[in-house]
Image 1 (cartoon, rainbow, N blue to C red):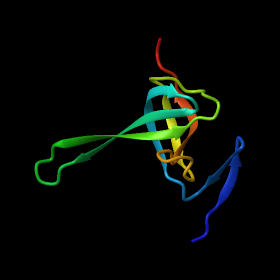
Image 2: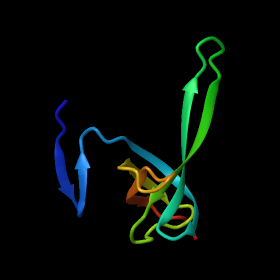
Image 3: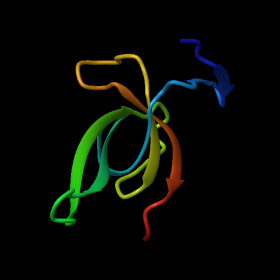
Length: 96
């Protein structure tokens, strides 16, 4: 499978990278953010909406995001034992 790569703001972006949008829940570590991504799915039989939350450790080189910010994270090479994602951009700042 061929992948298309393009340079975007100093970050090489590949077409086969996974992209997720979530909310920063922790910024206590240097250059690392914990991002909570929420997904929802309707149950096949009972049709109840099931919501699932998952935490991702993401690399933030410039420490640009803060708790409550909405960010876009992209999959990257393993940066540490837990970090496999990188903060690509801050979509919305936290209110206040």
